[in-house]
Image (cartoon, rainbow, N blue to C red; front, side, top):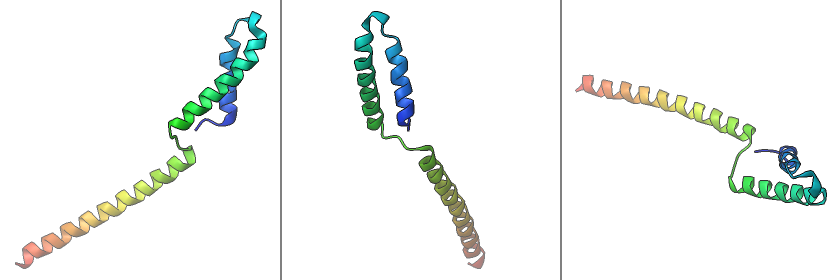
Amino acid sequence: MIDAQGIDQLAQRLSSLVPPGLSQARADLQDNFRDVLAQGLRKLDLVTREEFEVQRQVLARTRERLEQLEARVAELEAGLKTGN
C-alpha cells in the first residue's frame, strides 16, 4: 500500500494545482486531499509488497506439491491398471 509519505506527496501535488490567490485554502485542501486519499486507499483493501511476496511463495510451494501429488496419483493409477 502507499505509505503516509506517498499520500503526503500526492496531496501536495494536488494542492499545488490550487491557484496562488487561494493560499489560505491550499493548506486546508491539502489536509482534505490527504484524508480523502488515505480513506480511499483503506477501502481498496490493499496488501504490502512483502505480504504479496509471502503469498506468492506459498502459492509456488503449493503448486509444486500439487504437481508431485498428481504425478504420484498417476503412478498409482498406472500400477492399478497393470496389476489387474
